[in-house]
Length: 609
Image (tube, rainbow, N blue to C red; front, side, top):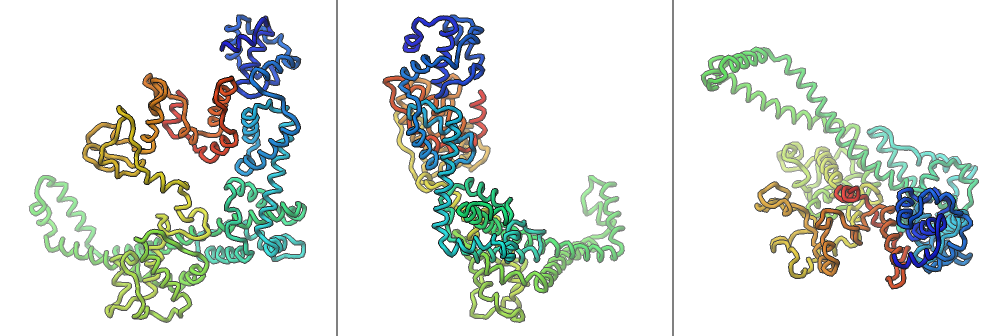
């Protein structure tokens, strides 16, 4: 640039080359290099060709003694050296904006450099930067511990400290039990997890204790606590000890709830699969006692192979006979009916004699919720089971006045086992049907569990602006901008359109572009791109086929490193007089972490190219 040549002035030889490299390095990185080796060799050769100085002359440049050059570059770019007050303000900024959402030290350091660039401050030296980072982490840790202790209250703090007291063997045993994973799928493991979950709930941790904390932060404290013994907790400062115990118990409470749900799902499947295998073995053994079926099968196979072109009546009936074949079909259908009946009998026997004891504590411990009215019958059936949980098992049928949901709960092949000839509903087979329906609904995420993490309310996984983004109509674009057909106005953003036949997700006739996901929010940005230079208004690629620089929407999907490079390039342009100021680095860090999702396949290919 012209201004850069004015700065070079009458410098010659190694001084000319070294100054130019330092100037460009500071513009790109926001700091001065510490060693000559930090200059990329391709950049050295390119700049050397511009300033007409051999690249080998760079070795003669005194990088450490170029204080006057540093001052000249700072003044030209309107930067200033960092002071103690600047370090204090940077420490406070890191403790409030970065440390709560980012635990990796390298990314904290990158965020600090970005903020220094935004404030037009030359970053302090390596040692000073490390001191700022350590001070910010310590300050945030104290704030985090104080906030956690305040939310726990005196009673909660006392219960947590009692877990690691020297004379409390029960507390140490509970702490060791919390760290254990569930055992193999079975009734004993299920009951053990129920007991463990109830013990953790007795600690009385307030709901939403870490609701406003990032998952990475809570996972970091949990990973520290799970490796510690009671003696290690006692050697830690009291505020950190309480926070570590609270993070461990809170995380394990959600994890145990998830494990309990998974055990329930696996156990219901195990009961059904074991009953079917047992009945199959019994019927297979009985089938082998029937004589003559192997010979009939051989005759049919021999006749079919010998006369493959003849019709069935002429080729097979003379060998076996139509009546014999009809009898075999009737016997097979009877055997299938007998098989299902025996499976139901075996299920009922194993459930009533052994597995049924899990139902009352399970219903008392887990809170099942549903947001879908289509699964209301399953929730009503669960309420009925909870009502009869303490009723003696000898009571075989439900009362005539109780409303027993059937549709959506009991399958058709189980109706005759659930309802007797008089129309009464039997409890044991109905409970089995409810458990199977509950298992299927949980796996579909139609029914969720309170206090769980993996099996939580699926609406909690949606972004905060999901409803607004889903219902926003497409903004009208300027003339010449492509619009979707009128029939597409009722589609949701991201819905896949088939072809000319209008099938969802099909491969019908029509242009390939018509089958791509339609995002009306992308159309809304067309008006804003109309004022850009020619060749840059489009989305994705320029008319020449090369990927365009990412905009704001794409930046939210970039990883932190790429996101930081985008902002650094913007700040380089902002250093020059006459350019608008760069956006806040705090917002850059928050955006990079809240929306730093991995690049999808098309974005990765575009960046590689």
